[in-house]
Amino acid sequence: MTIRRLTDLADPATAHRIVLKVGSALLFGSSGKPDRAWLATLVAEIAEARQRGQQVIVVSSGAIALGAAKLGLPKRGRGSLADAQAAAAVGQIALAGLWSELLEGHGLTAAQLLLTLEDLEDRRRYLNAAATLGRLLKAGAVPVVNENDSVATAEIRFGDNDRLAARVAQAARADAVMLLSDVDGLYDRDPRQPDATLLPLVEGVTEAVHAMASGKSGSGLGSGGMTSKLQAAEIASRAGIALAIVNGTHRAPLARALGGEIGTLFLPVRRDGARKAWLGGRLRMKGTLTVDAGCARALCRGASLLASGVTGVDGEFVRGDPVFVRDQQGRPVAQGLTEYASSEVAAIKGRRTEEHQALLGYAPRAAVIHHDQLVLL
Image 1 (tube, rainbow, N blue to C red):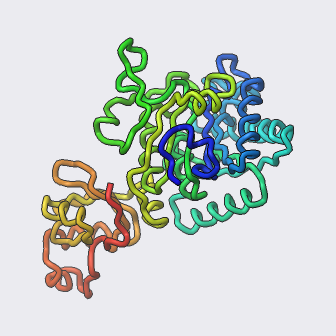
Image 2: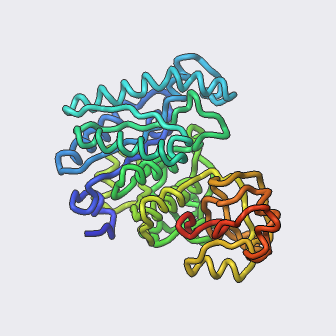
Image 3: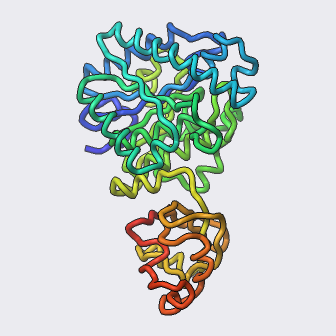
């Protein structure tokens, strides 16, 4: 059975394993203190889902805001990287304790898992995280995941928990992701406009869909916005995972969204294999290869990327690094793991394979990016 509508997310036959993302603005409301009454209703809904036979993973923001309040830091702890890291170190204890206390009230055991971007970008560490999530769920725990902001820097962090939730869903082989937001879902224009229309179902995140989004977080607490949620939907889609954006500002938000079918459900339009889904979900690329029109068409037919089709090389990378592939108009075509360093690609770009040995001084590899290490965007 496949997910086709929001109500399917409450059915263990279609959504046996779900990832639930909760943002800072919902946890704290306008008071600046944890909204325990609201969170208690959400935890009760998680307990109900468990009783129905569903497994739930929570991706929870809030550590920086909690820690900043305890330490008395300005700008909610986001005045500097050092402040954010210190606030996260203090706040993560309080955040984990809050979830643990409320889940324990329903006989559920919380498990804390802190991840950095590197943990899900490196293949070996990604598989380790996946194994840990699987074992926790099998043992009956509710994993509560957050970005490890106490050690993450601008270069090695997700920056928002929307995309983290999608990557966690990939690692856990979840059926669906639910992003709790401060709006009912994706609208065809700014939802503050009187003629804005809520889109209940989206099949494929296209350029037109991206144009509807704003990258701003209205609360000032979060770090995402609708743009990050659409990026999360793209990541989930590559792994065949449905993603829903629903309004979390109400009491018992899951019942309101699923019972009333109020929200936006993004249906996956593809189901890449596990490795290609991981590759397609990577967020940090080391460089960009520009290809000609013929090469772009060949890649879309499943071919490997050959040096003869490369017209430009940007960035510095080594063999095995992930790189973007774009056409000559700058449009994304694919991304993959390169077989050559950037200096080597620059030397052989636009040249036929039989010329490579003389240019490089060694026998060439079959392709710049083999099709097994490449995923279309």
